[in-house]
Amino acid sequence: MHFVVCLKQVPDSSEVRIDPKTNTLMREGVPSIINPYDAHALEEAIRLKEKVGGKVTIVTMGPPQAKEALRKAMSFGADRAILLTDRAFGGSDSLATAYIITQAILKIHETDPVDLVLAGKEAIDGDTAQTGPGIATRLGFPQLTYVIKVTDITNDTITVHRKLETGREVVQAKLPALLTVEKELNELRYASLPNMMNAAAYEPEIITANSFEFDVTQMGLKGSPTSVNKIFAPPARSGGEKLDGTKDPKGVAAQLVEKVFQENIIMVSPDGKGGKR
Image (cartoon, rainbow, N blue to C red; front, side, top):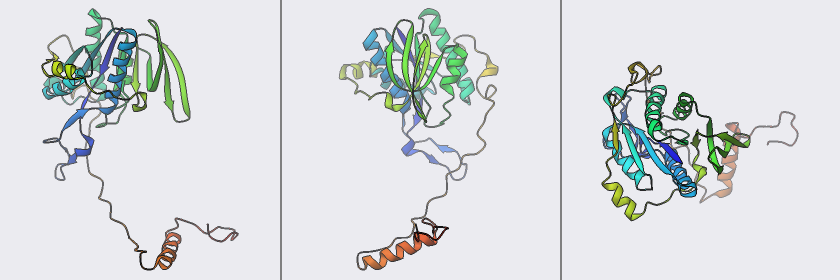
């Protein structure tokens, strides 16, 4: 079977800073990582390959430095990596990104039919959760979102558990299909030393806007109906009031209770029964 994983390189969320003058993300000097949800999609693809046989192809769109994310992904056991990189792709929103990645998958599918596409439920730098479903819609594949368990896969069908607000849903779909996955799906593996050595020298395949026919009206800024007008940092939180109860615990406890009622954190019963609650 042929598994295709859509992967994104994102800024490490713990290191992201915002320029207070321009209100834009400060990417210089900020380390990049594989989007955590996509890492679990890759892990599941490799597990499925080990279970039923086949190969794993990784597709990502980004600047040339995204090669590092692809090499890291290859070290976990993928077989092929493709980088979509071109200035013409720059500024693409989730709709345009879905179009570009879909065109690449369709090109792959022509010579190497795709059975299952996997992606993280969302990217941590955008949180839209739109790209995966957008790709599925353009491909005409059934889409199974928020997947937390793959229970069975055959040549024709896949059965999964989906995470819902009210519980779980067990769904079966015909292949080819697309999954977007949660982190609960699996535990990430460590890369083996031989795979790390091979990945270090691996050169991903490059696809540009001139590699085959793209519709320029559906990509980049022209193909992006949404735009970000402003990014701003939330106001810093104050430290809050501290009460020291080391010398007079009972007195401070009484003071705390009084403040709790003053702030209406605990309210007085409207019928007067039972006192304060």
